[in-house]
Amino acid sequence: MTEEVQFSIDAATERMDKAISHLESELSSLRAGKANPKMLDSVMIDYYGSQTPISQVANIGTPDAKTIAIQPWEKTMIEPIERAIINSNLGFNPQNNGEMIRINIPALTEERRLTLVKQVSAEGENAKVSIRGARKDANDEIKKLEKDGLSEDEAKTAEDVIQKLTAKYGENVDSVVKDKEEDIMKI
Image (tube, rainbow, N blue to C red; front, side):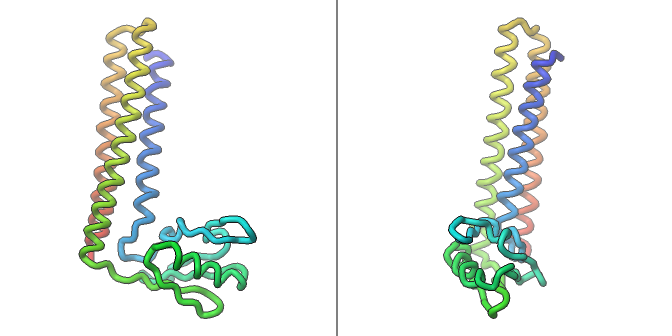
């Protein structure tokens, strides 16, 4: 394979890897009934005039499977952190004891579990769309190289490699989605 063809395949592989990474990061923020510090990744705090992620102003831990503990580095940040969590629409009810904030993770209802499974499926489909977009761009690049003198056999071989990559990454998405759905539906 020529250098340009290999570059196209490598670029497609990189984009497909990013689609999987993005899917995993999106799914990690979905609540599956177990406490996870990543649940608070989207919460931003007004820290001396700038919006800052909660993880940069406090230690976040999970002392048990149903509790998240937040220990601010500055005691003055307890109130803003508590307010930010309440305003984040995550459905959490933080409890402030003056030194730290505790969040008890309520058990998921059946209806909420089904809603989360739909969200997981939608995220999986978005990842597959991204993977197919990478395939299309790589195939377009191969066609362009074919017009510029790449042999028909090499172009066909490259397109086959790209298709196999697409299938492999599609299966990865299915596997990640299936695991998360099972995790959510587990009581």
